[in-house]
Length: 295
Image 1 (cartoon, rainbow, N blue to C red):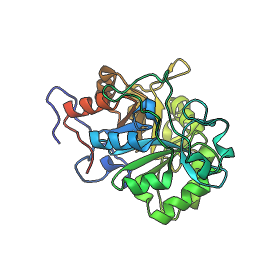
Image 2: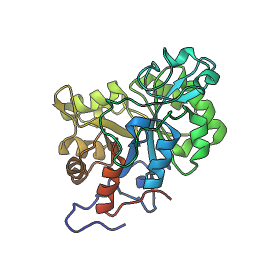
Image 3: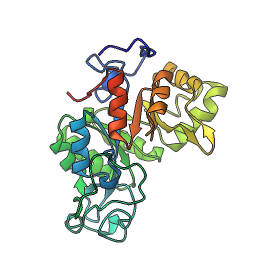
């Protein structure tokens, strides 16, 4: 995959080599930026198999997903704590068994922001998906898994261990304790991103003391996944990206839907972008000769 002459070449950072991060190991994506389909990058059908398959068909290798635990211990791909916004059901997901949840349909949120350019909202809707079923159905796809509740940790570990999916998952959570617990329980190393506390330390203390001084506090983190801005503070700056790279950490930015902004971030040297607009990010990556990213 070559780099267009009008673009800044992708620099060879001292990445930590992990099978999940295909830009960290020799291959077609070595040192290339990664494209993540945020919840499948289809807001009207988020976190459903039809969204995931569409993203893969477009060329995405990486899906960002959220998981929650049903009343009977099944790991379900779903973002919200309650079912009301997106589905034909009501109440908390955790109060329903998988048998009950499998009867519901994701109908979408009409006010969900970026809409697919070519695909209308489904009718009557799409079924919910178990994490295990998505792993089996898309064997070449890598999953960026946000653990949304504490109960999801042991169930996530059990599925990954049983399917041998260690190289296909990244464990993420706003709560650093969940990420640490999952890493302790897994028999093999999996990729991990930092939660709110570890990321805040890198953003606010990093410039003052250097990431080396707080390395023990962010041990086990392989990348930072951050918004461009948080609380009116610009997080993703060239200095922040360089500081993370010196520490061997990748920088993945969410959620970016504007092509011009995608190009600016990639020129800055970020290592991955998460989007709700699958076509827009695919076009940007195609312009930069790193598309498709599927095997």
